[in-house]
Image (cartoon, rainbow, N blue to C red; front, side, top):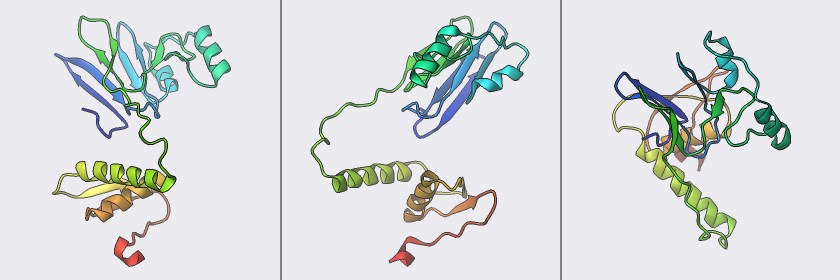
Length: 184
């Protein structure tokens, strides 16, 4: 349900809160659940500004960060804040204890181990192309926020190759797109 989305939160009075992150866990989603409120954000620092948040430190969370330079087992430096595990969604339903539920398991394969780099590049290229072709509906206007990094430029190039016209949104200097056939 969250295919291709960095983070998503859905809420309804009947179903409660569903929060999910990217399936690999590369981009953090933190949550803090209290009796009064459910807080979800990209940084636990955001929670400090909510009146229901208790700023209690978690010594075990801090020890995990100091020992591994990362959070360990979903713990953070704050006692009531957790990091959503890769491939999981957070379900906070009315009348039930909130829980993390696995939605995706990264497939494990040794099938690519012996392939040369150019073959792996081709596999990655086809996978990205297929994902990009799958997401934009055929009709409509599209805009993409370009950070200037490789990922946003790469996606813009794949979209252009599929004939999807995208208006680039940037902060700073304007961006000029070159059609792929002009690069030959």
